Length: 247
Image (cartoon, rainbow, N blue to C red):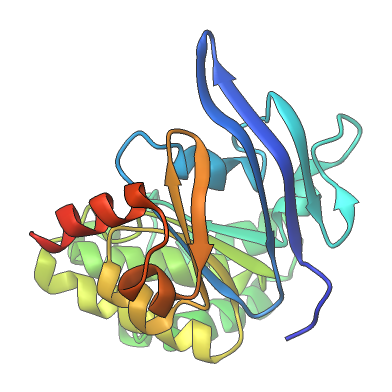
């Protein structure tokens, strides 16, 4: 793991009208690190994640990617986003396209990669997520878990430096969650840098390098999974984890 951060967030604030959602958040992400963001609903987790690739524009503070401040107005954010993959709660696949076509679209249109090469890359990405045999299937022929794995393949085919996961399993039936988490485990083992917002606490314990607990628009506590889950220092972290473990 290199010591220079891939992503840095400095005094990040975000307001929607009069509602202040993020109240001055600082964190860094190192290459090949898997950082898990946990916290109650409405605490600002997803907003924090979406500010990392400027899907939400920060009200104040800065976001740096490889040392470059990407939150400045003159930055070509579309170019930056090619290096920051994102997987959403909803799969956002085009229903009229096959799995392969959904993946090759951005490769051809954004990266201007020739059709044959983009198809090779898409097939390779589908193999990585265990769905090579489904390359000709349309989204309505796939389970929710398979659709999410195609969405992950679409992101990794772009060869990003970091991947953001926003509640990637929350729209799935419980029995389909495992397949998606297995793919994320594999990505982590292959050295992908990942920031994950999720309620999958067991996965956080098993796979994360660091866990950030967010509440009320602030990072209340951050530490190793072992420390966060077994020895939380903050009362609010303890309360949250005791409520979560009751379910």
